[in-house]
Image (cartoon, rainbow, N blue to C red):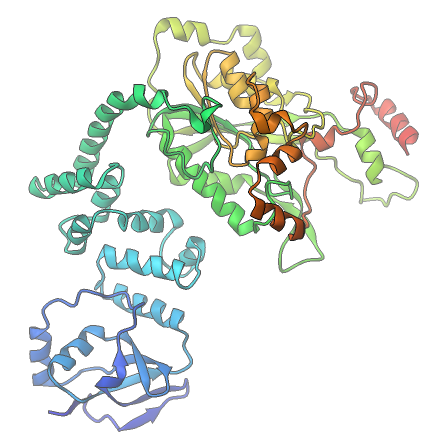
Length: 556
């Protein structure tokens, strides 16, 4: 038997969509490395069916190069007829499709028939991300599932090969693999996987057993962890990206107080796209969700982006709402938005007068400027019951009735911090003080994954909490050290500004890049310090309606 084709097939047919149906020599067909299927099972039954009834449908292939074809759908059938010694086979040739689209179509076809294991799916997602450049959000649009779901599958590829084989053959499920990924070492993962299979544990049972195991291990290592001194000279502060907070064990932080980058062109935001910014924020939130205790609280100060420009609409600016993005990210980890505070800041009239955004005789009706002298603070709470401290600590932590009366007002009128060359966006101690006193107990751990100038750690320690922070920009080390009352290192001692410090500690090759790299152009809202720049005490007072008009005339 030299060829097997559907009954009545002509030697060559082309339809209106450019799909060509014809016989192709088997030696010219290969299974591309990006084809998702790797396990073809026992082919004997399929080969018997082909011998009896012929190939019921052609293989779907695409053109790799002249005379060479890659399989899109039918890899198992190709394997079968290769073993049978056939020379040619009927193929439907999809002309003009790219390798990436062919890989995606192979995935779709196999998923429809439920042919792929979770490991094959994970490997395919990794290939689509690493080899073809798709982000997890773009893959979500192509039907691969949410970024949270695809991230879980990708994490399965970090498990030992032995455990991946158990996932491949169905001994373990995706849920089992996700639970096993919480265990720190591969040896422990393999032993726990064997226990799950041997005792036929459900995902819920396995997850509970792993959580119990890790809680015992955490108690053994807590004292050892607390002795770590990050970066050698700033206890409790890690100078690294908060997307990896591996120094902190799961469920070890009671409260997070932070103000992430707003994407408004600050020095620490240069060189990244808006999409990359969002992906970075999502990754940090995932780590925050890992370390926050059940019932723990995250206070997030992040504003909408005023003057935002879409890449496709370069001449138009708009307000980019950001709260929903952070709410969506938190919700994936069962952390829910429960309260919102408005931080009201005084209008910086002198700053406004310099920009020309004030009332004059030429001001067009319906075009009056609205001053962004406020920012939201979102209060999120993690799912679960919060473990309570002793009655003594509860009494010591509880707000007085007077303090509660002041803090419970949903609008907090707190002066912004004036401009400083040490850090472009510092928020006031009073803001952090209120949040920590309201939402944590004395002695609990408070984390800031975007530490900036060090305010959160400073205030937390002042009011008897354990303050921990992460800051990836080394140039802010001097201000953090000074704020925490530490002596700067030698590099800081000879540098009077953070810019000088950065130059002092920057590797030689980065200095060269800094000289030739162009500055990115951003458009965004004024930050805490910008809104108060150049203000004296008189111009910083609260204006009544008539005083405000008088001030505008003076500054105008």
